[in-house]
Length: 240
Image (cartoon, rainbow, N blue to C red; front, side):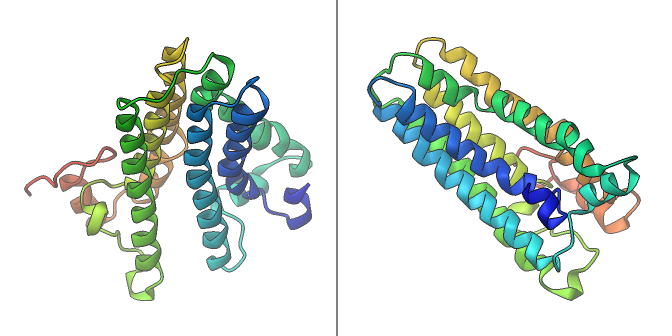
């Protein structure tokens, strides 16, 4: 409904993070007979991640002058018939299915008997926090870079962007691997790893990296940046 009211399909991107927040608290408080510390911890972590992401995407859209994201605008222009109806399966239902898959750590923790938290879970939290900070830092640095008109058409090659061409996406994936590790100790915990695996593959090979890389094909400055910088996982810059 919001998509039709505002003529913006990119509200789906704002809803992406918030959807996981709803799923996390539903799984932590409403599904178990007795809420567990593990489930509540996961819900808190997902809330921090999801709300920040939603706010960031909403603000980014506002800074763009109120224009719909170029990806969705192109889909709208190329659609035959009513885009409002076509966008349901193409965007929103597909997003819902992907959300259900990525949320595997939350589903496993909600469905299985709880296992008390212990010191080993600090590793999972540390992985999540590291990924979250990488993603948030990358978004802040990129936002500042794009705010300067003199940088138009030029890649950001400093800060965390010197270690990865897509550190925001890499941080997103790392955070979800932390959630997968948090769910690992419960019964059926191995299934939880399907979530971060799906998130990683989606960002690296489907909706994230390939679309962005495609935009810069043939750009001299980007080609030099690409030659020395890891495409996804952060790594020291290569010598030229």
